[in-house]
Image (tube, rainbow over all chains, first blue to last red; front, side, top):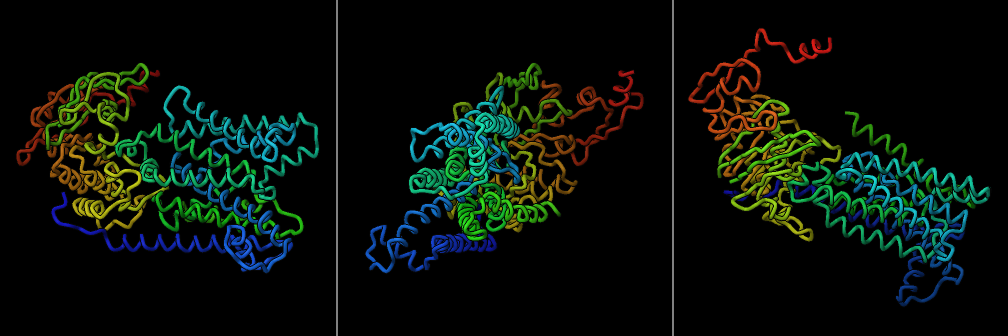
Length: 354
Length: 266
């Protein structure tokens, strides 16, 4: 078909280079934020010292210049928290990107699929009635995760009743299951008659990384890494689905089956994130928008950009949450909502104000 | 060549497409015409398989389409569908490059060859200068030509088009269709405008309530005796440069659809 060779327009290749630079800059930002966030707290530890302590734990030979207390603060308390923050931020951000493509709406949010409500029910059952206590240290995380999985199964099966899994059905099923499970959570709170329990459930729902331990790290880190690989491999299908079902079909995808599979992957990722951190709002909604402004809508570049940006945002927000009202910690969900709302309003004005 | 035999599609109890035969000759342009709700778009979707068929079969170059994997089908048939702005736009360049995706495994990213084909397709559709623009920001005519460029980049040999001249002004209608008519591909196109069908189609199939009323060369089908009972409007045919063109005049004594509804309610 190409009679003569026509190269890609210069403006396009230049744009591609800029996108790579965005990724490089964000990676550097994430790395810096990680080191700083581990150092910040009631006991401040210098970034160099943080790097040396971490290096010593992963088998690199460095002469010890730090105290045993500093060592346990960095390695046992703050590093797992920051790692979980990175993974949760990335998980929520890529899930937001994908959910927006699946339902073809830039204002969709990963919690739209009812996952958050399911996780809350699981968490409430664990906090109030000791459900899952046989899981030991990961009882809360485990039952929140199972609650989220139940929600996902319900949403996908409700969405499929009597027909194909189209966008509006998915949204409707998410809302319906979400309401039902929120009612279930509220009923558990009502039934327990425990004031402390109710307060603990509320705090869990506000979102926090304060309970982060090494035991929770594998769940969310593995989930986010696996999801990232799978979703990046599916990036062209996501591009096509974001355009429309007919286009996706014409380009060799089965939009119905793909939507269900991708929704499942995203749900598992969000379930893992919510299980370890509670409900942290706005990251999954706002980060995809900022990432799209930075690198455009192509998922192969959009997904890693959003992941890095989400990780950066969440770790920074958690750092603020720890220091703003020290020694008390501000629940992270409040802070992300406070930062996210004006950002979202600004973005909506710019996107739809024309 | 695309051969569809006795295509049938039901939506609940309604038969949207009823035993429709469509034969699109290799390298030709076949127009699907008919009034609103006659089943043109559903026929197109049934050929592609994006709505399930309740009967009939489709062959592409002699191979049953149902035997092809979705990717193999996408390598042979490209589609220019109606695409609404999503708020999640790609650039025109990325949108056209997507046409290469049926030929790439998930692990492969676009290569030099894909870039060259995308650029050549955009050049041919006259949209290379729009490569860096967001698809949502393009005018209707520009967007339509980007979609055609994507179909070209797909190098499929068969193209299905759903009203590609929708929302286009007269100049772009002719630009788009003369581009389509000049392609080295077998094309099935849904068209509302009978005069455009007369000028650019090698064959037309006239549908009414899901059934084929007439099929053949535009000169034979696009005659007032065939069309008037289907469209319920008076028309006159004049031949301009050997191309039949129709001039319509509303029936003086016929009631409009709205007037009929109002009367029935009384």
